[in-house]
Every structure is written in C-alpha cells, then in structure tokens.
Image (cartoon, rainbow over all chains, first blue to last red; front, top):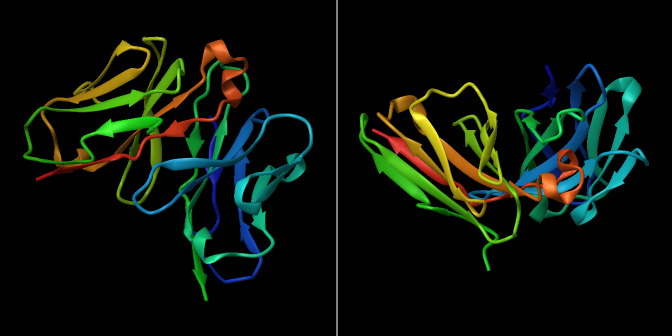
Length: 115
Length: 118
C-alpha cells in the first residue's frame, strides 16, 4: 500500500524567506506525485505534479518540487514567501498501474507567513 | 462560471437523519470523486465514478451511497447520520479515462460541504 508522510504539521516563515515543505512517500514502485494547496474554507487546487521526465517540476505561484527516487522524496520549495502563500499544503501520490487515479494524501502542512 | 459546485455549503442535522449532498461539474470531465476531510484536515477518498460507473469504492460504511445520474453529476446520500460523519465533504472531477493517462490527471475540487451532525 502507498502512503505519504509530511514532516511538520506547521511551518512558519517570514515574508521573503525560503519555503520548504517536506514530503516522503512509501510505495513498491515510484508513483505519480502531486502537491495541492487548500486556502481557508476552499477546496484543493493543484500546485504541481510529477509524472515522468524532468525530476524538477515547476508549478503555479512560484512553487517547485524535486522528485528524488533514492530518497523517496518530493519536497516543495519556493524561494521567497508571500503573505498570500499562507495555506494548507497536501502532498499526494497515485499509483501508476491502476488505469485510474486514486490519490492518497499526506496529513497536510500548514504554512504560516509572518510580516 | 463555477467548475465544480456543491450544494449545500453547510449542512447541520440531527443524528439518525438522512441527507444528501449534490455535486455538479461543467468541465466535461468523465471522472468524479467524493472525499472526506476530518477535523484534523486528513483527506481520504471515498468513491470515484467514471462515466456513471463506480471505479473506486473505499472502506466506507454502507450508509453512504453515491449516485451518478449522468457524468456531470455525482451525489452522495447518507443514511442514519452519526456524530462521526461530521466532516467536510469534497467533490472533485478529472478528465478521466477518455483523456489520456487518467493516473496523471489534475483533479478539480469543489468548495466543500461542511456537515455537522448534532
């Protein structure tokens, strides 16, 4: 069975600082990997995803993530945090071999951005 | 135009009641999903339909019954509501099997329905 671990339920940064949200997965074969963001009282929105090809993936709002197979990680980064980045971030995996998508989410990391 | 809409946005009801949540998507997608997000923000898939056919049915009490009258709609009916059913329920849709590799699809989420069982 696949699982996702997000280290740190809360991450606090200052505006302009580097954002690093950690995600590790457990899977018998490398899965497809996703990062979703949830703003308060809203549904989830896709930030970026890794399927195949280049392991450094760029997403919306200046976020990017790097797939490292040897570390089974898919950490999310942004060079400079904005106040508007404050939200809940979810890492998710989906198996490659089922013919359909079945997202398994991590427990989420709340990003707090202070002025 | 709202891509994935859910009604109602809030639902407060007594234990033992039966309630439904409706979901509609206007994206022309073939696949729709129901998720439950608990009070700790943990999000878990419940069901998925592709073109009105059930393709994912997770370990969910059989008091929960999804119904897809057409591929643009996926409703969730809950019988005999319990306190533990209190959560936010999200509907989502994705291109699905007709759109290439469905496992890499982007899912589009609705705004959620906050269900409170008293």
